[in-house]
Image (cartoon, rainbow, N blue to C red; front, side, top):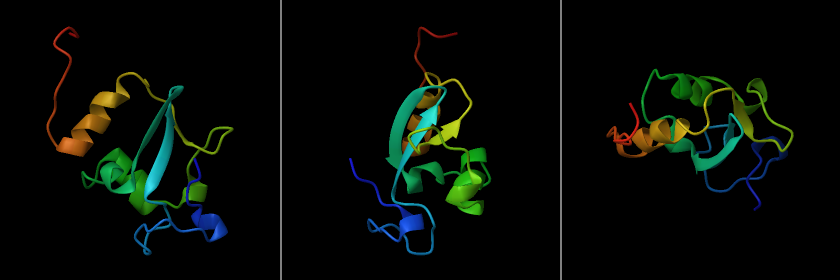
Length: 96
């Protein structure tokens, strides 16, 4: 899948004021997630908002495939991403 690369001048229709592409690939603890930039900045002043609105792509850690790397539990991150998408927290009832 080809992604926009703002460092190479390639655009995919993302907000021209943002140095990030519209579609973002993340490696969270070994789990790969693909989401929109607007999803990651949905909650102002959150850690992800600070990372993806206050910093530039070159300031963030990346894995060997160029995905943004977060050293967190990759399986639990899905709950955070779902919350950012819907602004509604839904947890697995089988998890304490």
